[in-house]
Each structure stands twice: as structure tokens, then as C-alpha cells.
Length: 303
Image (cartoon, rainbow, N blue to C red; front, side):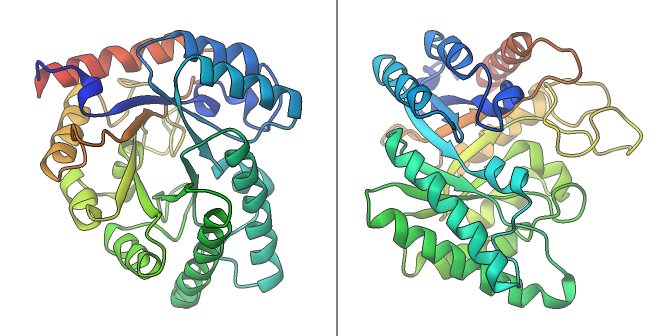
């Protein structure tokens, strides 16, 4: 591909994964956001909850000045709290919904265009009831967001039986879920993640084709699944080319090609597609980010 990447997508970075020390809403948030905002490779950034209101204001001003598109990730809010949006205990389910409503409030405050979350664990015997609970929770979040602004609500697809063990999940179930929500909420969509495809045992075609009508956001990353004894096993998002890992230039190229084929990457309305990469052990986050940028450049050239 010889045309600029920015014609087809807004290249982003998941801030709270690249710099995991800020995932709980504290830490060097301003310093690390500034690094990303100064890098004109990135047109978008995905942030998460920020506990200090003055820090939120400073980040908002910084990103406005840098002319960056902002998306908000509510995933850490659920994962850190242990709450489950599809919990069959109604009290606990509503606790998860209420927590994500607070995240939506922050997303609106930060001028985000989208708010993402994930589904929680489930039991196979009560899977249908869990799906119903998830649909009800999602519709509540969509209604809450719609009452405030045009914020999109986005569900990220995770693995269902290895690490996060989320209900959504396999591509066919993701499509069934999206169809149910979209009937009444057209600001809802799905997020795919290259990091999760090996965990789901799905190829790019198998993961993306069934959900193409609902796909609104995508991530690029890596995982280790071939051997549970290997470092970074599971959903830890190591750098591309990590030892015994699944994704590198060839896999990202194939992923991007399918995203082109289904019309997701386009010039009329370039979507956000972000790196979700995390330093392993003592790795330097900035070097992990540089790794990702080089891999994308090689993959783009190979299209």
C-alpha cells in the first residue's frame, strides 16, 4: 500500500496498556499522555478512568491542543473492580452498570467519541441467561449515553475460555449479541482485537466476517497461547515478535487485509484502530511502542 495510513484509519494507542502503571487512574498520567500527544504517528488515543479532576482537565486540554481523537476504555474499571456486567445476581449486575455509568460521565467530560467495555465470566449451563443480562446492561448504557451526547458504546470481544473467559466471545455469539442491541440502539458496535484472535482460535476471516456489519473499532496486538508455561501466556498483550508468541508482521498484514476486504478500513470515515501493547517485565514502554509502529509500517507496505 503506497497511500498514507491516515487516509484509511486513525492510528491510535491504548494509553493504559502501554503504560500499565496508570491503569487504576493514578500515576504518571500527564507525562505519558504528553508523550503520545507529541508523536504525530498517532491520531487517536484510548484513555481510561482518571481519579483526579485536575488531571482530567489537563489531559483534556492537552489532547484538544494536539488535535487527537479520544476514546475511553472502561475495561479496566470492570477488571480492577471484579464486577461483571452480565452477572446473574441482579444487585451485582447493577453495581457493574453503575460503575460504567461513571466511566461514561468521564468519557463525556474528556470529549471522547466512544466508550468501550467487556462482558464478564459466565457458566455454560446459564449462558442464555447471561446473554440476556448482557443485552439488558448494554441497552441501559446506550440509553444513559444517548441522554447526554452522541457517544458510541462499544463492546470489545475477548477470549471465552483461556484468560478473561468473557461471554463475548466467539464471533457467532458476538453477532447475535450485536444484532439484539443494535435493533434499538444504532450507536452501539463491536470492537475486534488481533491480540484475541489466537485466544479465540479464530482466523481474521472467521473473526471479522460474521461481525462486519457491527464492527466500529479495532485493536492491533499480540498474545502467547501455544504453551501455558511460556512467559506472557494468556491475554497480556506482549510486543510483536515476543518469544513463542502468535502475531508479527505477517499476521498483522493478514488482519489489515481482511479489514480492507470487509470495508472497515476506508477513506470516507476512517475508523480508530489502535495498538494494544504492553511492556513485559522490565521492558521500556517507549521501545514497545516503537516496535509496534515499525511492525505496522512493514505490514502497511506489504498490503
